[in-house]
Image 1 (spheres, rainbow, N blue to C red):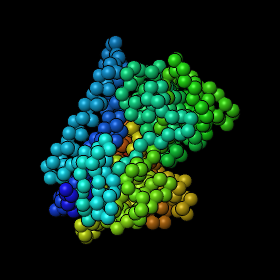
Image 2: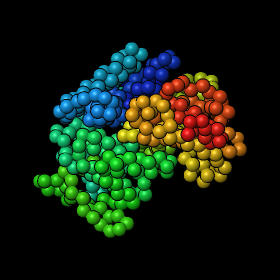
Image 3: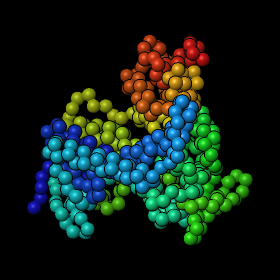
Image 4: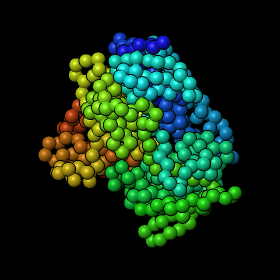
Length: 465
């Protein structure tokens, strides 16, 4: 028997469940089909549990540095099983919260694999057996992505890990090779290094955190090396040889090949969209490099079928997926004042030590696009709150259009910058110029004052440095 809905969402991650809740708020009869865990990878095996692990590492770091604060802490250590248990408990708590929110908003949830079954239809199956047939005028694909696998570097779940195994280690590895220095790679590198592992990072491009502003990348590299990490850039892992004692990686660098011997390897070389088994064959849905092609309103080439989140391409961020879910549903509902998502207004955050956050154009990219720029910088060593916290590593950088005063981009590295970047995100949404930012009153003492000073510096008016 076919169940009829106004909207069916395939995928219950941060894009899918948010889209479903917003649709229900707008009066649509809505269903979500989820094959594994509500909340998706982000909540269960990504954004949230990794931050719980990193918080444990941060507290351990502070405990080791207790003397600097006039405190004493002896026999400082950690219980890895308890650290992992806390992380998993937090993920479970939030997953239960998502389930409650869907129930509260009267969204029907179907457990199983959803695939297009003809125009306006979704077939749900589990373990190869039919579960339900759903019909809807509108269908949103929100199936997310999985770790990218490179030939010859396939994970085995034991010695060669993806992020999933890296979050639930049975024992603490003494040495670790991280392949890839994007957000996932450097976050795990920070966690394991703080807990005492010898960490080597291999990055294909010429710098770590390659999507960030070059100055931020350079500062991050110096910080990682001070922490004892070994960084190999412009390098490629050619082969992995496993034995009972660990893994030997053959790494090609500009100066020749070298061997790196470690107990474990973490692969963090990007993602692959989950577009298989969705019934896209014979539809107007088009793929480009594996990702679903959509227009500004998240519509695919098949009438009534939409796609949001990681399957539509970069940036692969949970908050981008959630925003797209709301945007897509509100456009379907015919709401006025719905605006397409401008990717230059999407903040990015990396929760390594030190934290990194950014929004908009880097200085280099702004110049490449033909902007005449004014750049401001403010080091946290000049910020009173950072000094009081005992954490002055880092800076804030702003990039303005010299002619119009438009804030083109902002880039930060240092304590709690992932919380502060939203201030610049609001500024970009409001199309704020340097004048409004300079006239904004920032509270004292806060690290956010460095945001103000970085604006002032771009115009020769910096006060505290």
